[in-house]
Amino acid sequence: MLTRTTTNPGSTNIEQQVLRIISKRKAIKPTRLRVSSNLSRELGFDTVDVVDIILELERRFKITIPDEVPLNTVRDFVRYVASHLGGSKAR
Image (tube, rainbow, N blue to C red; front, side, top):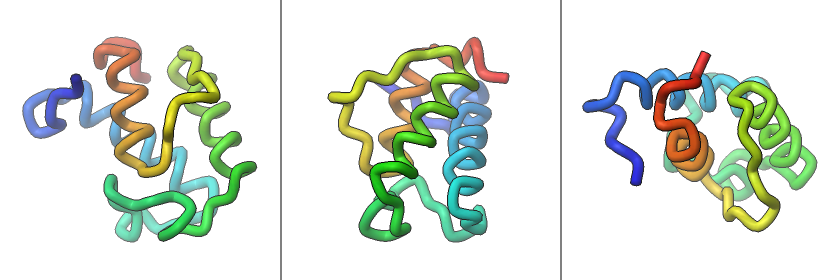
């Protein structure tokens, strides 16, 4: 279970890093990227974009994200990373 970012400073750092990685993939302005944004429907990301994001998140956070994990929104990525780090390994 993910603690809301307003009560856990470590989660905020994770969220910021995940948002940065996703926004750089297609040069999306951070103001346009919301945690509720659907990557394919709202932002036009394709499968290759999502795989590249996953690879970057795995490298950055030293985690493994299995293929079967449903990752459709920015929030899905943030929650997965935060739940597998506990907020302690983010750089």
